[in-house]
Every structure is written in structure tokens, then in C-alpha cells.
Length: 452
Ligand SMILES: Cc1ncc(COP(=O)(O)O)c(C=O)c1O
Ligand SMILES: N[C@@H](CCOP(=O)(O)O)C(=O)O
Image (cartoon, rainbow, N blue to C red; front, top):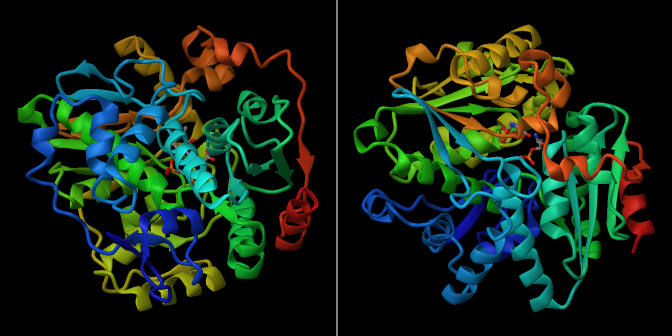
């Protein structure tokens, strides 16, 4: 299996090479050259453990990694989860399920991909003998998960950009209360979009990328998306057989990596009724799926800070596939979006298979209270965005993307009970260590160089 760029100006790469590069040199995103048809295999995976399922899935993509090595990488990646099922499916009613994706080391769904990516990078460093510099941008959860996935791995420096004051206090502590010399939390003035735009400019400098062996941990990295496909298939196989094809996955959405992963799994043969993109008040994606309007607005802080995003990276992959793999058109649209901050849908079909909802802060708070009262279930503010208009769906699987204890204040206000988690409690007495940088290419490159 090879991977090509959504912008069509990069030669096809094998899995390990595409993972190492992260962003394609033509500034596009890597995607599989063709989608494997897994429709016959998926039913045979019923009953597999999470790591077993992950291995079966990755065999189709990581074709340049020997099978026994891939198996042990996957086993190691999922050894630090605190639930034996890793991604348990909780039934709230006959028609309503929640898939809990917060049982990894940093209590958010990002752990599923970043624990694995950490192991893939460790293998790469061991094989090449070259150190790497990992650069990421976060609105709260990717940063902590990336640091956890890479902690203690030899030959890796970690630089994480995040918007100062716009992640939850405990999310910030997860990134900054560490004593490791090779971890650099970099706060910037501005929004996550500013951090992500600067990061893409840094990756866009091919010479610099090669000079410092730069690697990506955001969902621009194709390994992130592929790893996230697995829990959809896991949930699908845990549903009663007669509900599977009637199910809609409801996905709290920001950078569009999570829902894209599910949608890709469906294109490989996981037959479901559809996907629901659930946004907070930063609703560019809702406006697109609802009315075909893809135009930038200002990023507004919300109760669900990790979804305070307007420029969703993975929308480019969705565009590429929806345009039938037309890289030239994808490139033109993305370039004009960068210039004008909007684009017209034109001939692109928006299907009922991907629908959307939006919630403002008032609705998020109301929903956390209602879900707690009605089902005795504590939803974090991101997960809460998924609980809208569910009566319109035959069967809903809401992805629970973060542990409520990461956002204790808003949850306690809505339920009367403060959610806690021992790993977060332990951080409260530790010292914060962070660095300030300007969110521009030159300042970030200078900082990275100064740490070589
Ligand atoms: C808790 C939480 N929920 C949902 C999302 C949105 O996921 P995605 O960016 O993949 O759309 C994020 C951030 O990515 C998050 O951290
Ligand atoms: N919400 C994310 C934003 C980055 O998304 P990613 O999936 O591209 O890493 C975060 O928590 O940082």
C-alpha cells in the first residue's frame, strides 16, 4: 500500500515514510492510494480484543512493517489503558450508545493514535539512528497525548504550540508539569488556528524539516487518522447485529480528524447509516454541512475549548475524496481558501450521510445537566455537543472524547458533582514549566534550532 498527497505533487510513499514526513512536501495531506475493501473481513473480526483488531486493520496499510513487529508495536501502544476493553460501548437506551474514548493515559481520544505514533517514532529512531524533533499544535488534548506517547522515548524532542489561556487549566498542567528536559510546551498569543497555521508554515520549509528531522503529531499525520478508524469498527462490532447498519456515529468535531476516520472506515466497508458532525459555536463545519457555506469566522472561546477551531485540517482529505480524488481541484480550493477564507461548494455533493449540529455554551451546560439527570451519565462539554436532536436517529453512537474531570468547573456547575481523576489530582501541586513564542514561522524555527 502506498500513500499519495491530496495536492498531487508528491511521489507516492510507503507507510513508514509518509508517517515520518507528516505533511506532504506539496503541503497536502497523505491519503491511501486506494481504499481497501474490508467488507468481508470486518464481520470476522467480531470478538477480537482492541489490540488484535488494530493489528488486523493496520496490516492493510503498514505493509512495510514486518507482521511480528507490527503486532508488538500495537500491543505496547495499548498497554497503558485503564479499561480492559479500551474503548467500551456504554448503552444508555436501546437507541442510544456512548463509546468512551477516554481510558488512555491522558484521558482523551487522542491517546488511541498517539500512543501508537509514539511507538512508530521509537522504531524509526532506532532504525535510522537519527534523532527527531516532533512539532505539534494543540487546543488542549493532542499536546498532552503526544507528550505522553513520546515520553521517555530516546532521540525525540517534543515541541507543542498552544493558545495561552485557551485550554483548560488541567489540560495545561498535563503538558507543563513535567520535568523532562526534551519537552517544550510553547504558549502563543492567539487561537489554535494561529498555532496550526504557523506549524504548517514550518513544515512547509522542506530544508528546515530535513535539517532537524521534523515529524508531525497532529492529525495531518496519516497514522493518526488510521489509528482512529479502529475504534469505530470496534464500536460497530459491539452493537447488536440488527442495529449496526442503522447506526449513526455522532462525533464532537473541531479539526475534523475524528469524524473523517469514521467516514473512511465506512468507505472501506463498515456499513452504517451515517455520521453526524457535532460542533460548538465555532461552527464553520456545521454551516458547511447544513448549508454549503464554508467561510471563516472568528474563533470564539467556549465551554468545549478543544473544539475552538475554524480551520479544520482534515477537511482537505474529505474534499479530496468527495471530489473523486481530484488533487488538482483540491489544491485550487485549498489555495483559494487560504487567500479568501471561503470557498463555494460548486459541483460537490453534500450527502445526507454526513449531517451536522451546533451547540452554544448555554446549550452545552443545559445538555450536561439533562444527560446527567436522564441517564445518570456525566458527559464532558465536548461530548455534550453530540447530544442534540438524537431522536431523529434510529440508533446513535455518541463518541465520548474526553474525561469530564479535565473540565471540572463547568461539569460541577451542571451536575452538582465535581468529577475527579487521580492522574489529574497528582498534577495540581506540581510546578508549571512553559515557554512563550510568537506564532510565526521564524520564531518557532529559531526556538527549535536553539534546542539542538
Ligand atoms: C475532547 C475533544 N473532543 C473533540 C475534539 C474534536 O476532534 P477533531 O479535532 O478530530 O475533530 C477534540 C480535538 O480535537 C477534543 O480534544
Ligand atoms: N482538538 C485538538 C486540536 C488538534 O487536533 P489534531 O487531531 O489535529 O491533533 C487538540 O486537542 O489539540
